[in-house]
Length: 380
Image (cartoon, rainbow, N blue to C red; front, side, top):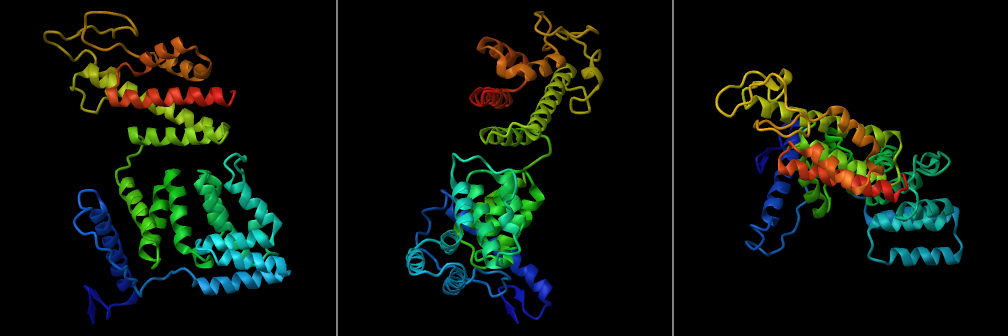
């Protein structure tokens, strides 16, 4: 039997692959139709169809309420508590939010943990709380508290610890697998873990049958954005810079952040040198700007600088070649950037970005200015 190009007589593994492909196509079509160019073509809402081949699905709300009530009665069953429970489940909040509130109602440690995770002014955690792996607690409590906690940290951009919390549980063991895979994918995407993020996105789109439309669309956009990622290009530098800024805003200026800063500076240093070499070779370098000495001594003709000595940094001259950046100066400037007066910073930026195209120069200038602001804000 064949349904929509899917042969039901094929082995289940082959059918599963076909179903995954159909779901991906459905999400892509939805993205196109929802884009501004197609927004007015059809304003009629269509009912989302569910596939019977999905491996994961959110637990029925009524069943979750029963599980939550059973857990609560096992730890705290006085009349006032049960009345509060009833009010929680009479709201129109998501099932996961109701479960989180129930856990907070019955366990003071859970209440404190979730409150801190949501508090934008609270210090970001540096490790996964022991309560999430406490075997003395029920699996219902541990698994769903971990999901609610990780989701709250993701909203605060505390991606590292959120991801660790996600890793402590499985999607099969929580009340909302779609929330699990979506927020886990967000963490992996923001931390530039491309393969991990793609795996989570694939599970969300292909395996969870009742994922909210907003999750599917954002997940697909993340996937297609990652298709353009290149190792250590300008986009890589920009994403790395954003992560550094995020960590500084979370007051995480330790060794890991410093290592990331060094990686960015080293890559910018390499990019500047590649551009200089490419300019000096006037396109005669076959290695994309990586010729020894930038292909010096190979130029001739009118207007070409034929000197074997490159023009000195910051020096004038009549030759058409840009000055060569002093690489030691790049490192020196980076070390004292936060302490430099405004005029010195402006001068340093000119020296660092002189040979870059305007769009590249803007990214680097923005990064260093933001770095200075955050350094001053944190009193470092």
